[in-house]
Image (tube, rainbow, N blue to C red; front, side, top):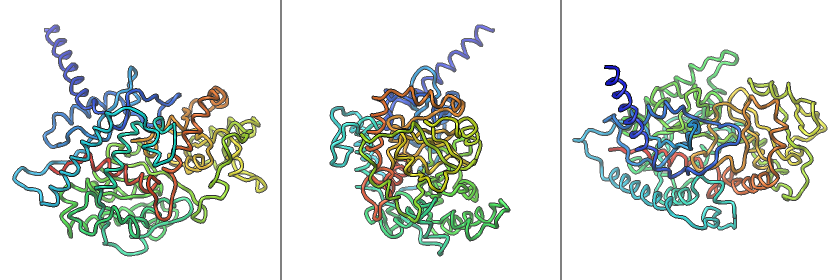
Length: 490
């Protein structure tokens, strides 16, 4: 009896592995040869969870996905660079319900887009001119998981992708947002979708691939929240009411339970507001700065939004044109900031005022300039505060100061197409006492390549008015486009 039981267990494990491999062999936006972060990883999924997800996807009749395009690295597997193809849990339509003509056209177009992306992903050869948008760039192939697949996907997005912006709601909470200071990216995206983005917007919701709910969580906090109460009820109620209005007025929400709808928020409380409707939280695409995988952020469907802090709404003049690559950077690393959250106290306790090579400050004296320190440092330390995201990452990119990510559970922006290890370093929080040793050990040639990587990807984090190709607005749209590619209506 024990022999039979052991044989049955072995057979079940073997079948589980086969099912898993059926869903991890289409690595279009990740390549198995891509190296991981040198010290630890920003986001990982336990291998047991990967098997559970793969098996549940394979055995459930409620899912309808073919060869998903979007993939997410699993960096937890000890033996290899396993990659999981991610899908959305969206019920397919009943067989006796036919798609409209517009829906059929869209689905056929998406199928053609998937095919061209897969074909591009399989090609080899020189790619330096493809992804650089006309600029010579010999590191183009190193900063992307799959440069050809990204470029083809981007072209397909420009050719096909249509977004319908709901007109429901009134100012100031809807159709507007902050366009300067720490939540700049939230307002700028809303503004671009409302007043620009002509290539992507459609007034006909029947021809839209996705639907944007253009409310601002930052303005909810400003106008609805009662200070010092930490009560998110009013924000949740606003989201619940908004979904109730659009789902009652139009058929599109109910068609997918909101899976082709998205919200965007850079406020720390964006995830709390999304709790106002369970389908917004669990099914819709949430574009969030607070991309914390331990607090419900799901890279399978959600999008990590870069936090961009523009004082007065403009890039600081010193960061517009960084000094030449040959300019000296006398400091090994730099940080200045308050004691917010659990990581910064550890950093300051070990390094504040301890070593002239590591310029670690709580707050800079008034006679010292923050951006000058960035421009004179080889590495810029980017520890999380109360939440995982930090505007220092984008500031470091602008300053061509290699970002050092000090964070737990942070899903980095655009990690569905960018290889962050090509232009940044992540250090485990437990390694903070050894921080100088870790940074000094980076070879000079690797540091040079990291700097080149920063110059190559800077355009993807640039906020432009109006938006320009490949800038942060279009990268956000591309991340949403990828998740829509993985969703099928039938």
